[in-house]
Structure formats: C-alpha cells, structure tokens
Image 1 (tube, helix red, strand yellow):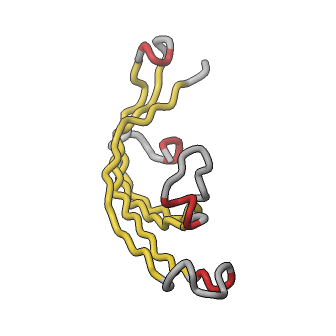
Image 2: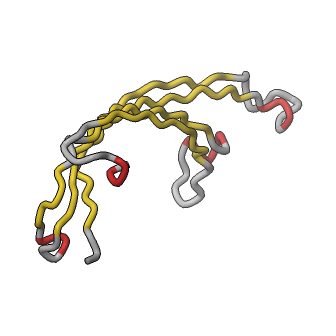
Length: 116
C-alpha cells in the first residue's frame, strides 16, 4: 500500500477475511473440546500522509518513505454446535451457540527502505 501512495497524500482502505481457530493440543482448553471455531474480521484503515526521501538509521541512512497507519478491526464469531453425530444418545448435552463480537485498534509506522 505504501508504494502505491503518492508523497504527502493519505488514503483509506478496507480488508476482511476469516481465520479457523483449530484445536490446541498443547493446552487443554475450550478450543480442544469444540474442535475449533471461525473468527471473522474486517479492518478499516487509514494511512498517511506519506513522507518521502527521509533518511533514517533503520535504512542505513539511505532515503526512505514512511507513513503512519491506524486500523479499526472488528471481529466476530458465531458458531453452532450440535454433537448429535458424535453423541447419538445425547450424553454430551444440548446443542448450543457461541456468539462473540469485539473491536481492536492497531497503529504504527510502515517504512520502505530504498536499496540504492
């Protein structure tokens, strides 16, 4: 994104996706008993203004571009569990739903060192 942004300009972008949280066999926890769940996420971000031709020690005193970014990330999970196929006699219990929503903020500086 930083390479596409003109100098001294700002921009916004959105990205989304999902991540399957699988069973964790090293620590026995809820994920192990449920065999995993899916977390959906959507990020709305701002980047810039992009500063160009800035010398920094991080880039061995070569010129670089850099810009601050901030993202508001919304996450959710909604999974239905019915153990009927694993437990035809109903010993495990009733089907149930897990629903969750939470937001995070993420920010920092992204830099692009020139190799010349």
